[in-house]
Amino acid sequence: MRAIDDLCDAVEEFARETGGIAVISDRHVSSERAAMPLIIVISAINQRLIEEGLRLRVSLIAESGQLCSSHHVAAVLGFGASAVYPLAVQMRAEEKYGPDVDDAVNAFKHFAKAAEKSLMKTMGRVGLCTVESYIGGEFFEPNYLDTSDPVLRKYFPNVVSPVAGVGFSTLAAAVADWHARALAVTGEKDVPLLGLFKERAEGAGHSYGTTAVRGFVDMTEESISFGDEARPENPDMADPTYLRLLPLHQLEGAFGLDDEAYRNNSFDELPTRAIDSFDITPGYRSFVRAMNSERTRRPAALRDVLALPADVNFVRTADEFRREMGQFARFGNNDFQVRGLSCQQTDDVFVLRLAHSPNGWRPSRHRCAPDSGEKSPTTRSWAMRSGSPRLARQRTTWRRSGQRRNRSRCPRYNRPARSRRH
Image (cartoon, rainbow, N blue to C red; front, side, top):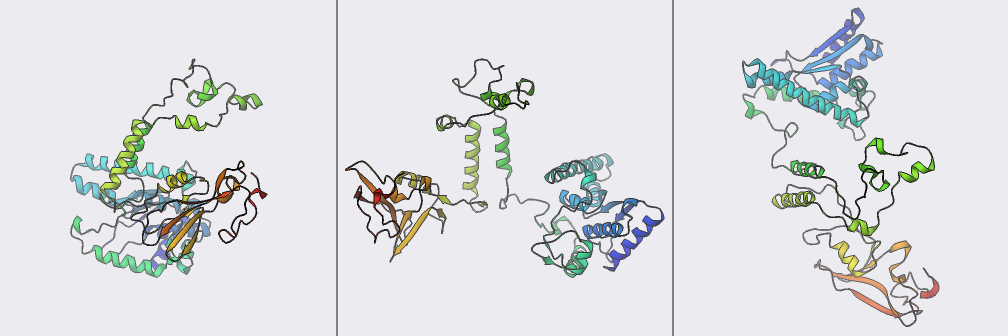
C-alpha cells in the first residue's frame, strides 16, 4: 500500500509541474522487487488525479508484463489508462524468433490486431464505439473482491461487488507468493496452465466450441430459397411477402408515415401448414449430426448449461403427453422437472394427473358437455411405481355425460359436469 501511495504522489507531482504522458512500467522487476497489481495501480492513480483536479493534465500509459490477454487490456483501459504496451508479449516474440527483428515485429502486430478486435467487441457490449469513451469508464464488476475493504474502497470507489470476496491483504500476500514461485521457474514447462490463456483441447465445454462455430458458419453460407409455389412471378416487384430479400431502394413506401406504408410493409403470421412445409437443409442436417457425434464421443466433457422443464400444461391426449415426455431421457437421470402435473402417492404407487389444459380447462373438464350418450374421459392419469422409471399404461375412467363426479376421487371438482360449458 505504501508503494502504491508513493507512486500516486510521484504522478501527482508530475501533473502539477509539467503534465503530459506518464508511463507506468514494471519493466525493472527483479528477485527482490515484485510487480504491483497493474489494475489496482492504474485505478489508484486515476482516482488520485481526479480528487486533485489534475486528471486532464496527464495521460497514463501502462507498460507491463501483466497484459497477457485481451481482457487485461480492456480492464486496464477501463480503469484509467490511455494506452497499453504488453511488455511480456514483446519479450516473448523476441525470445521465440531470436535475432530476426521482422518476424518478432510481425508477431507483435498479430497480437495487437487480435487484441484490438477483442477490445472493440468488449466496447460494443456497453454501446461504445470509441476508446476515448471507454477509458476510465469502470464498466467491470469486481467479482471475488471485497470492495468494502478500506484499501480497496479507496482505490475502487465506484464499483461494488455483490458477493464480496478477498481483501487487499490477501491480494498482497498472493502477489508475494507468486513472485517467489516465479523465481523457481527455469523453463516453459514449469509455468502452470491455469486455464486462463489457453483452452484445454479435451476439456469441458462451457460455451460454443469449434464444432458448433463451424456448423453455424456453414449454415449461414447456405442460400435462401423458396418453394416453387411461393416464388413470386416477378422478383423485381416489392411483394410484401419477400420484402426482406429486396434492397432498400425497392422498399416502396417503407419509410412513409401513413397507414399505407405499414400495410404494405408488414408480414402476416405464418400458418402451421406453411411452417410444416419447410425443408431441413443439408447444412442443418450436417450440423445436428456433428453436434450429436461430439456429444457421443465426449459425453463426460459436455455440460447442459440450460435445461428447461417439460411442459404438459397444453396437452390433451395421451399421445401428446408421450410426445412431450419422450424428449427427456428418463434412464440415467436422477430427476427432471415437469411443469403441469399433480402427483399423489399411495404406498409405492405415484399417480400423476394433468394439472392444466388449454384456455384454462381442467383435464377432467375436457369435453365436459358431449353429445347425449357419448362417453368422455374424466381423468388422464399415469401410474409410476417406485424403483422403475418406466411409464405405466394409461388408466382412463369413463362416465356418462351429466353424471356427478366421485368426490373421493377428485375432491376439487365435485360439481355436475354440465355446470360449466366452454
